[in-house]
Structures are given as structure tokens and as C-alpha cells.
Image (cartoon, helix red, strand yellow):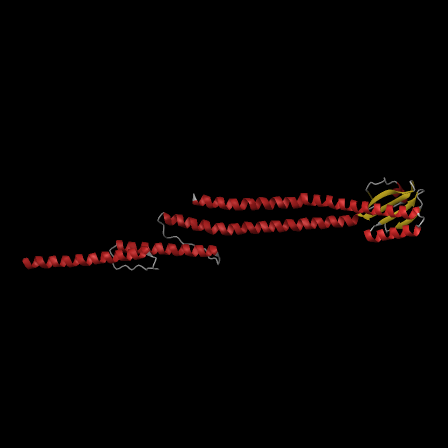
Length: 288
């Protein structure tokens, strides 16, 4: 029962560690990247939405007052601040009024973009909206980010997921080794104790560690030596060696002291019996 109990303790420790490690590793390898990819996509959409809204508002104010220089300044500021790959402004006849960025997307493909709908075109994420001035459509504005920027963020996310998974698996393996290093010597001590309980005193522990487990094994080894010493003394006493010596280890060593007193008592009894025997022998010879 003791061994199975210890095994159950080991199982109780190992199973949660294994389940946690595997579950976390699976989550980091599958669900976490998917969640991160969705989050990154949403961030890029929000960035383009906010940029386009700011651009359209600034252009509407500038164009309504006829301030083309202000429109150019707004476009240039947004391009630099938001790191845009493309910024295009057309009038209602699709004549290009402003253009910033290094992206070279054909005008026909830009014109075919639906309004307020994110599209991937020639390696860029593009978003388009109308510019309304005095209640009429003045033109359109298009902003774009490089897909390479999103892919770099996704790659960083995968790297984080991979490193986290490796770290968690490593921690799980270390915990498994730690649990095994604790339970294995305890099982060995238990086997030895059960053998001694059955009378087998020829047991030896081969546990050499500089920690609490090692101290436990050392103390148990001293206990076995103590029991073995009493056993050897008892065996000699049973063979008639009344001069057997027992090492009393401390003031609290009641067993060794009692055994030594027993040996002394038997020795005294033997001496008295010898004396009485000699006296009887002498008396018998004197009467004869």
C-alpha cells in the first residue's frame, strides 16, 4: 500500500504538469498565433481607418477653403507619421492632385477599389474613401500600407509563440525531472523499509545527495545500522556470549541501554549460578 501510495503521489504531480505543458504548448503553437494574426490584422485595419478619416477630414477643410497648400501639408504629415506606403488624392475626374509613397499601383486598379473596403493589391493593403466638399463629392483619397510590414509583425508573433512554447516545454521537462528526482529515492527508501520490516537487515541504501533527500537517506541508513547492531548483539547473546558489548548512542537510547542491562543481568545470574554450583560441588565432596 505504501508503494502504490507513493506512486499515486508521483502521478498526481506528473499528470498536472504534463497536461499543463502539453495544453499550453498546443495553445501557443495553434490558437495563440491565430489570435495574434487576427489582432495584427485588426490593428492594421484600425490604422488605415484612422489615417483615412484624418486625411479626408483635413482635405475637406483645406479644399473647402481652397487651400491646396494645406492639403499637401496634411497629406505629407500623415504619410510620414503613419509610415504610409501610398497616399493618393484624386479629384472627381480622377485627376491626381496629391501623391506620396513609393508604391506603384496602377491607376486602373486604384480606381476599381470599392469604398471603405480593405483590399490587398500588389503587396499593399489599400483603403479608399470619398472627399465631400459642400455636400458634393470633390474626389477620392486612397491610403495604403505595405503587406511586408504586417508580415514582419506576424513573423514576430510566430517567433514569440515558438520561444514561449520552447520555454514552457523546457520548464515542464525540468519539473518532470525534479519530481522524478524526489520520488525515486523515496520509493527506494520505502522498499528498504519494507524489507527490514520483514526481517531482512542486509539492506543498503545507495543514495548520495547533498540535499534534504540525502539527509533523509543518511538518517535512515543510521537507523538501519542501529537495528543491525542490536540484532548482531542479540545473536551473540543467544549463542552464549554474555560479554557482548552494546554501543549506547545517546542518553535517549533506551533500547541499547536496556539490552546492555539485560546482558549484565544475565552475566550476573550466570556468575551466581556458577558460584552456587561450585558451593554445591564442594559441599557434596566434604560430606562424602
